[in-house]
Length: 405
Image (cartoon, rainbow, N blue to C red; front, side, top):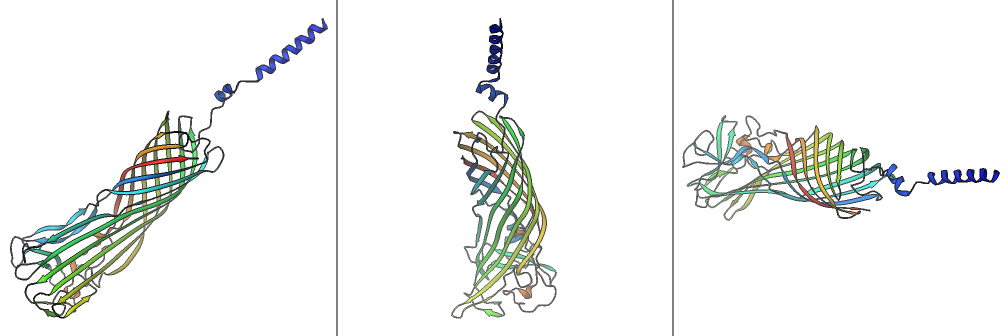
């Protein structure tokens, strides 16, 4: 009887021991893998690197002043804004076309579970260019003039590029625009499951927009003309350059969220960020005029028509700025380490300076070398620096590859 009691006790202990040992798949079912800030399907990897090819469009560059006018025929008010005229260049927005670029990103999980991480990213777009050329092939036809407002006469006036019986030539506009940026963020897991995750981020952001607008005029005299304080003979040439350069640089902190959703080997993500900070704005204006006389060489002055001594130089300012960003992405996991993706980006930026808005067309003829009044600096000192600001945006698509290890 005692032997049966001992046997029963041993059987109960063995049964309870077997029930306490769950198979491995039961453990996985009860305790699923924890979500993380790592890219989709990157659990077990501690770092990720991605490279993207960008195709972006930027907001067109505004030119708020008429630059070149024409008229149907000669006359005392020909091509003036107060007379018969047509604006053939200016009062427009310059299109810089499609700009290509590259973006590189490096990320690192700071803990074994992938709950906290660091991500650093930077991008650079190619130069966008807008180039326009107006030529008067027949001497003086068509009429091409540069309209200004004469503050001494308090009236509209023009400086001729090409006019019948006076001179002929061409006018050239060249504008360039380039955008770059960088950011560094701490990433933290917010909530989610094996299928989706919502992460939060906080960090710093930098943006750099550099642009210029160069206006060039070249005219050949067909009759003698009073200019540069002298009488230039027939066959003399005038070359005039007005240059406007702007830079906007943003430095600030940012916060944001990123949502990732998995569909098997496919994944989709949406990221939204908001940066607040300081926008450092810089404007540089310079001009030059040259007179070439047959057999007498060339003389020059450091002033053009719209860029003269009253507004030439470098001007700087700091303003508060806001930069929101939206990023959409669709990816495909080739394997546990490699992912291909395509997406859309939109960046908005407040309080930037752009070159076409820094033109003051009110002028004092005494500051313009080609004017016969040059050197007589009476009256109002113009042009000045408007220091106009506007909002800016850039958007486009990206194609990339992401490697996790």
